[in-house]
Length: 319
Image 1 (cartoon, rainbow, N blue to C red):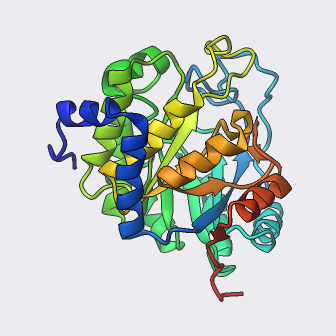
Image 2 (cartoon, rainbow, N blue to C red):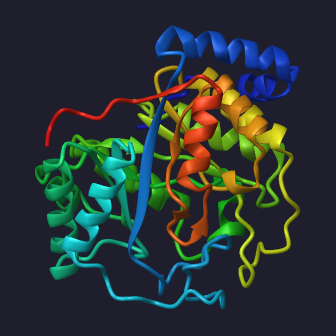
Image 3 (cartoon, rainbow, N blue to C red):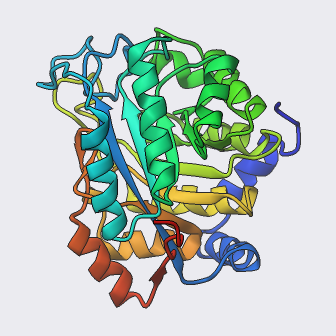
């Protein structure tokens, strides 16, 4: 599944390119493969919050951390569909549903997610889920229900992974992505910066994604949201230009991929977000909450897109 297309040296040379030169390069690649003024609006809803047995150092939903996020019951299908309908009315074309699970377990809860997927697809939206690890058979059930995309982030480099997460391995992540591919579902996978990783870790995370064959159709680039109670709560904020650089490299390495400006946007200025979009980000998560962390208000995003002269991806014609 991983091909040796890009070398470590090549990706590091991109990172070390003067920023404006790198942005120019990424912009040219972006314009060759994407409409220059189109941004996809996506909405992410937590359908099962808290109580996750994983120990991800960044995550407020981990049962290992005291963050004030309690385990909650899973939402019912009607409530999820009502949220999806509101998201579509506000302009979102992709609706992603997340559950704080280590892995998918067969049974009523998974069956409910399958129903959610089927209903969201019936509304004419792209359906995406992020549920943790899953098997080939489970991926096939989601595909049969109409699932478009499965999100399963690599988070960081293979070498740095064990310093962020100890309850699963990097290979576990790749195995799930392989199961998703085998089922014919598109892959959404990205990473987080600001967790104490080195520049080489950032490069290796992007290189691993870019060397997947085929490349992910969607790559979220996240900035760490520093949540009190998590082990990474006291990390310094990222330099916004580092995020711009990561977006530009992602675009240069993965020309056809939709690069998603994701977590951490609430700490970015309008100018920094627009630089990311100019460098190749052509999707944002839209709505005031990303699972359990803050996100810009919808009216702020609409104003940003309007003031920049950008447009949003048109919804499908399905009812």
